[in-house]
Image (cartoon, rainbow, N blue to C red; front, side, top):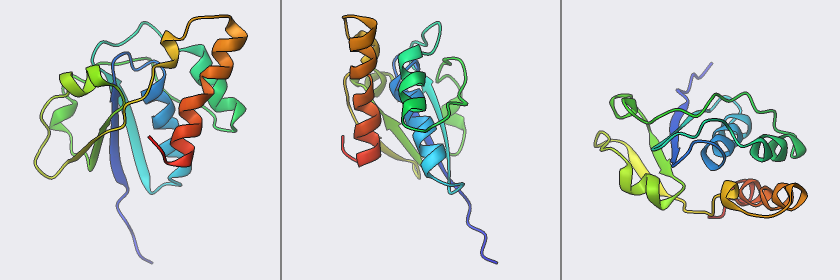
Length: 136
């Protein structure tokens, strides 16, 4: 039996309340054990955006994430990929070891969308669709 070490992916955004939490859930669910994803933020929010959680659940992805957390100290862990999903996190991103691949997948923050709860919930699905489709 062939044993393959799972890829370790870290997703960073500003608040760790929507985009990075959603990406973490998507990678862990769709990776089927081949991926271990975690997420953090440069300025963690007080809580995870409830629209992010409900959008994931509407797409059949059960959120088992964590409270928003800071990226402090994560640069000392071994990551195969570090992905920033907003410009603020890219600017605040610490230096990682040379073997780590870094990428930037900038996208709008669904937590910043103004409007009614129904409208926000509908618009918060965009990051899920973008990640699932593999586009940026």
